[in-house]
Amino acid sequence: MQDQHNTRRIPLGLIASVSAALVTAGAGATWWVWNSSQPSQTTPPQTTTQAPTTSQPANPIQPSPKSAQPAAEESVNVYWVNNVNNRIEVVPSSVTLKKADKPSDILEGAFTSLLAGPVNPAFATTIPKGTKLKNVALEADGVHVDLSKEFTDGGGSASMTGRVAQVIYTASSLDPAAKVWISVEGKPLEVLGGEGLMLDQPITRETFEKNFNL
Image 1: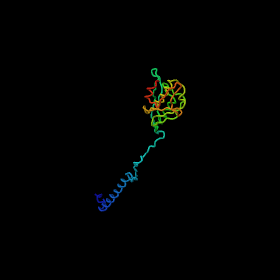
Image 2: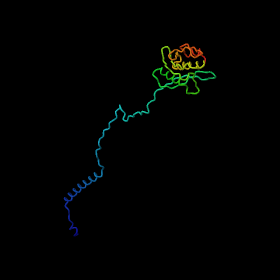
Image 3: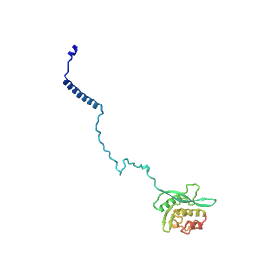
Image 4: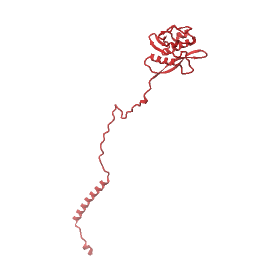
């Protein structure tokens, strides 16, 4: 009972003041602890993305010089002779040339191949070695072919007929109905060879087949 009389009483007002102070301090401490535990919130820098223009691609691909397109080409027939069933016939062979602006340039390329001789051993030529093309031209009256003097060298009638056929068919490779005029060193060829192969010009494929036999 003596202990109860010695108990000190704390005034209610003081208790209320201390409690308020503790509440305030506790709230501040709680706020500091919560904020210190959160990740730092910073405003990210703003970036501006520029859209590529439509006139030029974002990553243009430059063409490689090695990937350049090859030059355009075209094919034309040149004519050789061949033994078919024990008979000499004129046979075509296709050659590839660079694309030309003028038909005369195509024919010039064809005659260059013809006078160089056949590559395929199955074909032969009756045109004398060393014969050169002096000129080839497309005129209003037909195709004019001028050859060097070697064209008239040697050979019998079969050889003479064969070489004339090769020239006529090659000259008319762009137009099978074309009229062909043959000259040697600038002079019209009227008689070919010692046996006197007469050439009534102009000559077409049709008239050749009617008047000459290989």
